[in-house]
Length: 153
Image 1: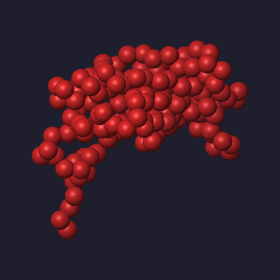
Image 2: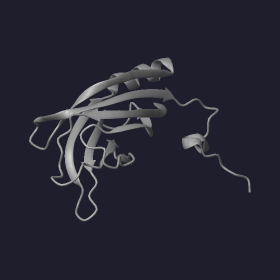
Image 3: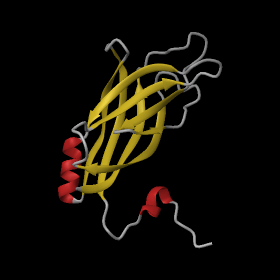
Image 4: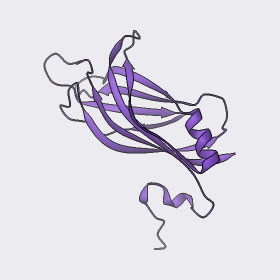
């Protein structure tokens, strides 16, 4: 089994359907992969064309348990006084990326656009995402995740 890090570069979205009638959307993305969930920053008044340019990292095993190699991107609209609204979702299949990275040490899907679909499966915009997978080498410890180092103090 190979262990590594899947780094998702969340670039931007385009043509999202506005949820709020009175104000521009404040979109963010919930990224889900095999029980792990990460949340992007909220783009205040980002509207239908938000830009994140944000990197989000998952710890990944390949081949892992189950055969679901799907990265879910759920675009949400942050609301202050009520529950956040679901805008749409994109699904990216990462099995080939992980297999290539496990074999070669690393692999990359350059940023490209994926369709966003609403709750009724209708098209409601696109999201641009790039993904890299890097096999974890033995000399790196878990304390290297996210740039934080373990302190001796």
